[in-house]
Length: 521
Image (cartoon, rainbow, N blue to C red; front, side, top):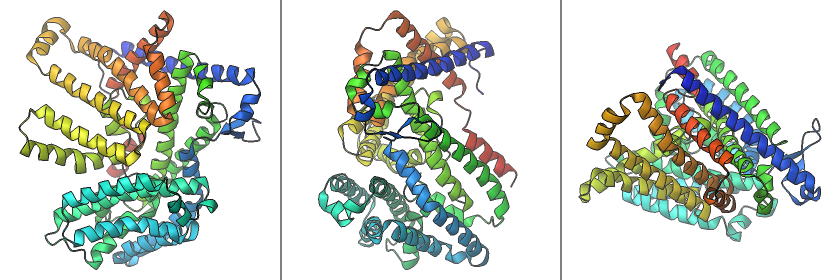
């Protein structure tokens, strides 16, 4: 741990931040209960409140379609994933040259059996298009033009009746609808990764039969086919060079992880029986009745739920991938210990971050610096702008995603400006003559980062809940708060920033155990 100050001060900030989170969640539950108990008909008006576990005799919030889709996916796929792994081990031991063909066959079997051959056709369209572009001599610019076209088409087709008619829309469950939408987005990232790596590493841009096998085995790899995370092609190919045929060490790493993710899943489902903030959002006037602290608790809950959801999904699929010697990205870092935008992007979805840096940010930086004469900071901002434009298109070209992307870009811009200021001569003088110690500098940084943390939280609310809720948080932000609420929020944000800086170099639990596992191999 990087201690910025005395342990006492750090413990005080940690205590304040912990108590603030607990108090905000308590006020959320209290406010929610008062609203629902005031009018029993509200329960009936909220379609996303359904009867929950019989053990509690309570309603359950079922409004998060991503969580429902994940549970549906793991329910229908776990048997196929286990069979794929077991057969893979036999092939890896006796005939390793056929492992890629088996990955393709097992994915075909699962999709066609559980979700239908028409979904298989939809999935294969993108690899076929990218292969065709490469065979016709397409370069990187062609790959990106095709990618943009496909993103535009994808964001348009999902609102067209003929697309769902082709997939027999009336017979599809909601979870199946979302699964194919998620799958198309993840497949595109894998197609981009393979295509650009192929163009960079091949002198003759002609895809041979063995290249098709490489391409399809990567794109269709079952554990991460529908729900991610993104594993870069070079990392996927590296797994075939690992000569680790001993199954027991991998199982000893896999089983505890899966057990932990199962506990997380039960806890998350348990919490939906007591916190109905997502369901209540269907009636924005009910949300307006909440106090400002309760609303902060709602924002905190959305962030924590989002974090646990992706820890479970990425962690589970990543654990299955690591059984096949594929080094999956580490699970997301808890949002309650992140205070600036760059850390959120770097440590939450690590696979997506690596993709964006390798294929968009760095190439954009190099390209702009070659053709435009600007200060170094301008190249970084242009590269960041290109990156966030892609993020906006990939996540869905709707208003609340645009607001989320824009506010994230503004946050990154403010971080760049702050970094420039921190490297200036005047700041160095200020640090030496006024602040004098690193302790005081850490306190100053925490004070300055606190408003940025608040903006970061609100920007994520647009992603979590849409425009109505995001706008509501901005309304509360510009209202004159009471002195008590102001003290609570400001001290909480400051404490979070201070603790986050202290924990900056502390990795996630899964990454710690993964490193320990490697040391004992």
